[in-house]
Amino acid sequence: MDFWIILYIIDWFLFILVGGTVLYLGVFSIASLFSRESVLSTAKIQNRFAIIIPSHKHDNVIEQTVVSVLSQDYPQRMFDVVVVSDHQSEITNMRLAQYPITLLTPDFAESTKAKALQYAILKLPEFKIYDIALVLDADNIVEQDFLTKVNDAFETAATKAIQLHRISRNRDTAAARMGSIFEEINNAIFRKGHINLGISAALAGSGTAYDFSWFKKNVMKAKTAGEDKELEALLLKQGYFIDYFDNILLYGEKKRTTTKMNEQHSRWTLQQIQNLIKNIKYLPGAIFRKQYDWADKLIQWMLLPRTSMVGILMVMSIVLPFIYMTMVIKWWILSSMALFFFALATPDYLVDEMWDRTFLRSPFVTLWGIISTKLIHRKKDNN
Image (cartoon, rainbow, N blue to C red):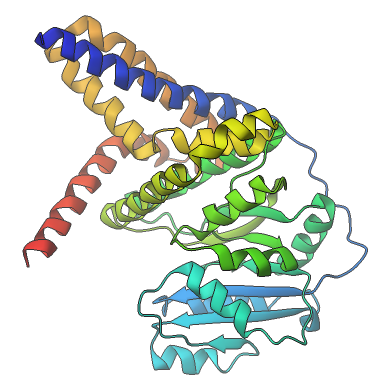
């Protein structure tokens, strides 16, 4: 086949794939600009919380998280803190044991968050009754009125699951600043933008509150490292709306190196592909039954991961001018649109003196992170 025909086919195939992703992101980034009334009504009752914190090799941060959770103005008799300390040091466990929490120390041969959550549920005393299961990460810090707000939000939402606003508490490296920006872009597009259009928000892996009875039954069905996406799929298939509360904050640590960040993104990409393969068969039925939240989630998993999208945009924008200038114009326009939509979805507080440098360098930092990650894995394989 002629070289130019092959080039045109590859060019337009990638352009349609990336263009569809950019269009989807654009619709919801614009929707995120509109404000939704999110005044919390004061809950009539104080629900009882089981706060589950899986902690796998997070010795340096878990104690801070426990202290912040125990410092709530919510009545302490109304919540129990369960820390699943997985492969952490004896010193860490001894320090944690000093606090009024339930400390579990499993020894998983292969650790996953799903296993930790399931272990916690199985170890909870049968005689204790809970209303809400709240899942936090080991590095999450919360404010003193956090549980009071979650209690109010859960009653306001009147559904089986709500997602709270995760926000970065460190922006001390280029990778951490990028992670902070990407986190907030995800919050804007996949949560706030969706809610504003009446579509379920995406779960974020932590800062999620579930109806306890639903969680206890359904978390046992999780099999992979992406347990939050499995639970999200179950909620949407069962017809439950996932609400999002932008004004209830919890703070987490971002990866400080591009290598770590890209390893994390690689795991997320793999989970996305696994979820798509497992669930794509449900798309026709979801559309036919008018399960639009579930159909939207399946379409969302069909989109290019943002890292891949940025990589393709950058490569095509740089390489094509050396082959045929006319072909690159549409890629420059698409790249400008993607950057514009990302800028729309970035909150004002992140637009500081470092924002321009971080935002404009992000494609190059991401690409170098991917290359360095591949080199490290190759070196490990050779050893």
